[in-house]
Length: 116
Image (cartoon, rainbow, N blue to C red; front, side, top):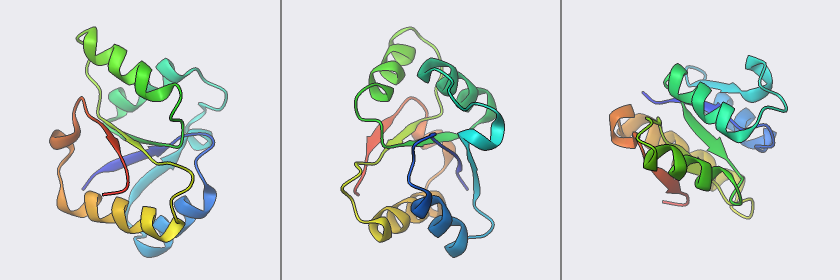
């Protein structure tokens, strides 16, 4: 199963809904691991070291930093970019589907935009 890190401004309703639907989901928030206020490259480095896919609403900077990591030959566990306009229920369904039906290796070096 996939492991996740929710970005600092990721909707709490989504993280709570994910944990309610799948209590065994391995999901932590930036705030839980001492990364509040950290720069995007530091967050991406932490996800790589921890083997976690980043869940983010940040369409403006995270994808660019992720692609820079890839271009520089650095590894990255993956990023799921979730537009804020998506319904909470849809995001939960999509993330749970991906968590249960795909492997971490499939997302290495990938920036993926939801919805499915």
